[in-house]
Each structure stands twice: as structure tokens, then as C-alpha cells.
Length: 77
Image (cartoon, rainbow, N blue to C red; front, side):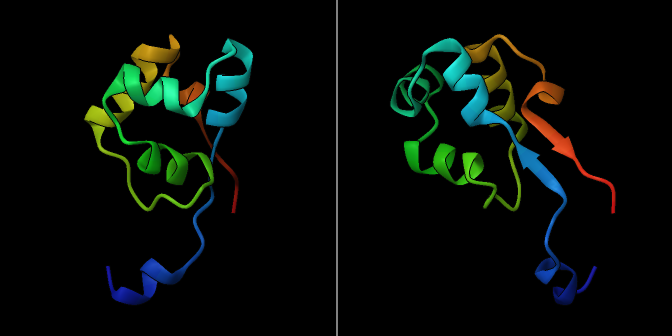
């Protein structure tokens, strides 16, 4: 993979905002429950993340009672 590949827009959408709203939870509360910084969660929520650690994904899914497929959608090219 070359540096040029990193410039392409990704096709993954994060649904963290919807999951938080459905649970009546704030990003700050999720941060406290997961130990993941609010800034990192915000980057993920706003589809600006370039990568997500499995430990972060696991913590978020545990806190929200969801599966990774509930959190992300990959759109067709």
C-alpha cells in the first residue's frame, strides 16, 4: 500500500451518534465507561478515524451493548 492509498476517502460510516442517542448517553459518559478519550471517540463518531484499535472497539461495544456491525457500515464502491 502506498501513501496515495491513504488519501482516498474511506467508505466506512460510524453510527456512534445514533447508538449514543438511542441509549441516552453522551460522548463524555461513554468516555468514562470505556477509558477512551473523548477526543478519540469524537474522531470516530465524526467519521474522521483512519483506524480503530480492537481494544477501543471492544470497549465501545461492551459499553453500548452492541456488535461492531451495529457501529459501522461499509458502503459499496
